[in-house]
Length: 150
Image (tube, rainbow, N blue to C red; front, side, top):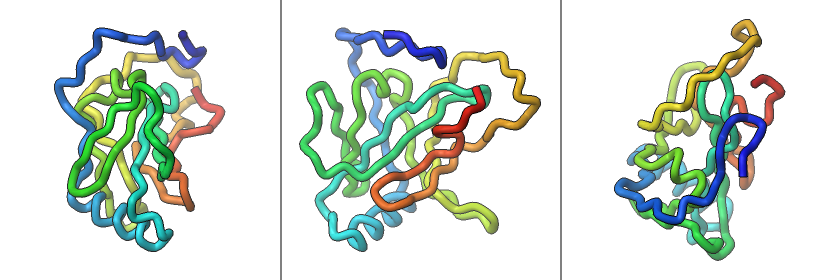
């Protein structure tokens, strides 16, 4: 199944993860605080590739209290369980969920060692270029996610 944004989500039945999706110590601390404050200490962090823009992959993150879906991969890092669907894992294998704390911008960021395919863009630099994400309730919004650009 291919999407208009250029990602091919064809099932890859022979794909075997040689790495994992990890959470940094700082991100685990922030996530633990969020889960405790929301009364969801046993919940998981679900991550996924939300699309492809001119600045690279766009990501989604959210708190997931449901049972893993068929085919989900489950990782554990610093006491945080991470769920990812197999299609997203093929683009995110080896990624690190990190916490960035800058004076003007704090939030979760995904450091992905897998390069996104090159893409032409006519946005004249108007697209979000960061990988930072911000927690809002049960959903963590990644910059660029849901925007009309690319």
